[in-house]
Image 1 (cartoon, rainbow, N blue to C red):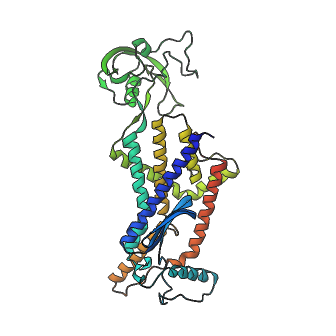
Image 2 (spheres, rainbow, N blue to C red; image 1 turned 60 degrees about the horizontal axis):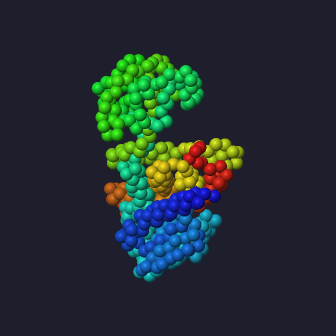
Image 3 (cartoon, rainbow, N blue to C red; image 1 turned 135 degrees about the vertical axis):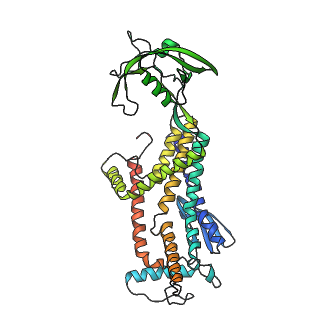
Length: 434
């Protein structure tokens, strides 16, 4: 196995753990600010690899780097009507017993004097802020990574610079070849003396700012003589070029052939074009909409993953990818023949997209996700506002313990989905090439 492949996987996992650590920090900081007692801050799952206690909180790293958590006391309120300092000893029915066991476990960590430091007793807006902190941190990380990508590195773009791969002869569109043969006539660009590295800056006095500008001006002109402004080795010059008419593929639809369009005979050069901060917002907004659409279609997407895993169907490039699959992509990136700049760009984009997806997934208003707790806090705020307007007694805390059976069912479905993704990422991975 290529050592760069292994390094890529390790680097991605470190980036993932960094993202998880900041996600949990987004919960930890407001929880401590609002006085909730936090007993644990852990990155990872499974047995503890390292930990250290500072004050009332144990900070640590676990061996399985696929998640993390903070443990806040009093996540569940006691049963309505019960003494909050005592645990109800009996329960009837399997679901009721499950709920009461969870309440009992939640109360075990509450020490004398902690009554006002439990999570459930905090104001509704404080609960919302605490539980929103994690996804918000993911969005901040995604924005930072996308800013590094777009503003610091740039996005691949075709520039009006003559590529070294430019052919010097006219090859008919009907012939699938790139080599020049005897009898092929030279291109107008070759006849005019254009060289690789020349930047096209004007066309008969009209400015060329992009490859799209060059394509539009050349094709719409048709056959005939033009004055082509270029910059060669930093020096501007003007070349006289006689365009010819050729049948060429349509730029927007390669299957369609445009008849007798102007033809110069140059290929563009791919460059990393840096963007503005405003474009970062638009880029992230577009991806957010795409991720939201994917989440809405997640059940359908998971069916596709099932068929890819067990029937050998092709993986959907727009479908979900697990941590194992993303890690393999990280290895593939570093082991590829791409330039160092492009490797960094793709890696940063991978981490940015992962943080965006994690943040949005956690906002789904279902327990045990953060969005379920946020929804509970918002509902509590609505109930209290309604009671205040109607001059009714203040309602009690929203009791999320009542939906624990549904929570466990959803958690089971999520574990099955995670297992399916791991299996699919092992037997039929989504790679950069497919």
